[in-house]
Length: 238
Ligand code: AP5
Image (cartoon, rainbow, N blue to C red; front, top):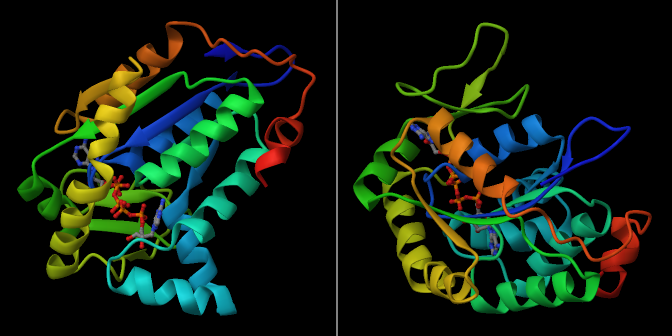
């Protein structure tokens, strides 16, 4: 994690892996607030496209409503556009399979940069189902809360809504897909010596602290000069 002179925050590149409900969104929001990095959440991109009622949103909706992954070409294009416009990011919900991981690796390699931390948040399925059924999101701020473990502060006016895909049967199906397609990525990143496994059942603050400490060391081996913009770094991939 590299302090940046003249602007508030740090240049970070953090990848959050983990099953539905492990707390990727919760941690990504906090890490982005603390470091000033951009929070890139593929689930949010998907929901925004659906809400905008575009033709792409109509196609995406069918996958989302079934709890299935949106096709790789659509998601990879969405992510690469965001990476192209930011040097410092927390990536939440991407990659979800080996094809997506390969696309991200190619982009990172071409840009000459590396992850500060690849974090796997880990928790048993039953705990995840409980968390997701109690999850509520503020329509005003987008912040994520929980009915019993993570209540909204007084200054968030809400309303606090439940996500359409947080029905129990849907959650179980999403978890199955996670175990089949996304969980193998832990081995993929572990082989490169890049994986930090974190017990996601710990308190939210503890998890954030663990990730920040991991991102601080070793320092970011950013190989391109600072003056190169994110757009230049990722231009090939967009
Ligand atoms: P997405 O929005 O990414 O959903 P997800 O992966 O199902 O992950 P969640 O948002 O459910 O879980 P989270 O880990 O962020 O948990 P949270 O922080 O909210 O994706 C939605 C859909 O988009 C997918 O189904 C797919 O269709 C599509 N999609 C997205 N990315 C894609 C990709 N790359 N490729 C293809 N398709 C893609 O926490 C959960 C709850 O727990 C909250 O209530 C929170 O308050 C609470 N909590 C969190 N941490 C703690 C803690 N430490 N202690 C106590 N409570 C906690």
